[in-house]
Length: 160
Image (cartoon, rainbow, N blue to C red; front, side, top):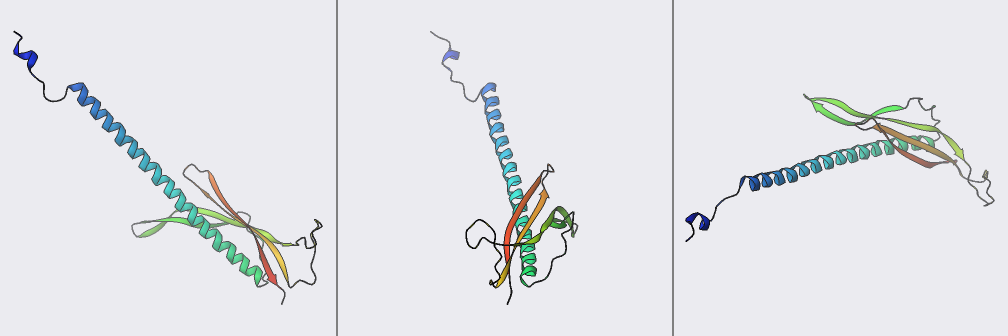
């Protein structure tokens, strides 16, 4: 006859099983938290890039409209123009968190290759002039690495 202890079924978990379960739950929750932080950081970078794109588009459209009406542009500033691409309100006062530098190259008259011989031609019978406009914006991230967006566009000024 065997003792009654050998037939007794143990209820509950051992210490090792409990510790293993806690460790697995900790690893899973830690990886979820790292994933959420990474996604939030990437989304913030996307928002910054989107705002920088909007600023650059508005700036390029402004310069293009000045060219279109025949207004001459002053030389671009050597260090560029600072624009705010992200603000945060602290105690009701907006605080600039991220600013960008926006600039352009002086527009040059562009002569297209009309007859296809590989040489740019002037067109005295044309009703307008084409100008090449190059603009860009730079902004830093948390590591102070510069991000850049560039537009290389053409603007027509009609001679009517």
